[in-house]
Image (cartoon, rainbow, N blue to C red; front, top):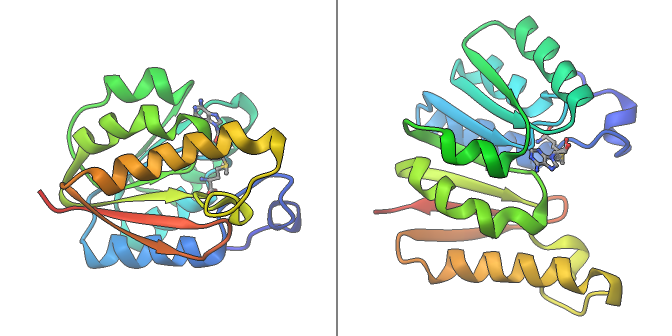
Length: 185
Ligand SMILES: C[S@@+](CC[C@H](N)C(=O)[O-])C[C@H]1O[C@@H](n2cnc3c(N)ncnc32)[C@H](O)[C@@H]1O
């Protein structure tokens, strides 16, 4: 799928190519049947997963304009999908069933709040991808003053993942940092 310049340049963010390719590879190798994306943007990644794997897509996006674009993109791809427009914090507790793959790419300060629902919704053996968790090296280093609060939220999220014996987490230096957590129990 072609990613337009305005998206690549960050005016309408989508994840980096390495992260998207890793998601596709994980979806293929896990024979993913249901894929959840939190913060779908204009639907580039969700549409690529659907195109490449045929998985059913459930995508959450708060911004109405992006949600409209994501719907258009997903409807051109064919297959089974739903785009849930609204705040992920309100929508996630209402979701049921299990997913083999979850891509967490919404508001970084809220990852901690979303983790219990992501864990509940993830099948055993499934994978949770959390994007942008290293933020320009600030999470493992010294953040600028005005970013300290956000960095603390992300650090707390990573501690929650690492302290949870049901997850095994690996890090990849893709884009602003990707965590891939496998739910082993
Ligand atoms: C980095 S972009 C997503 C890119 C997309 N995952 C992709 O790879 O193409 C993050 C998205 O999260 C959305 N977002 C921010 N806060 C949200 C919230 N509370 N609930 C749902 N979506 C939210 C933003 O509107 C934005 O489109």
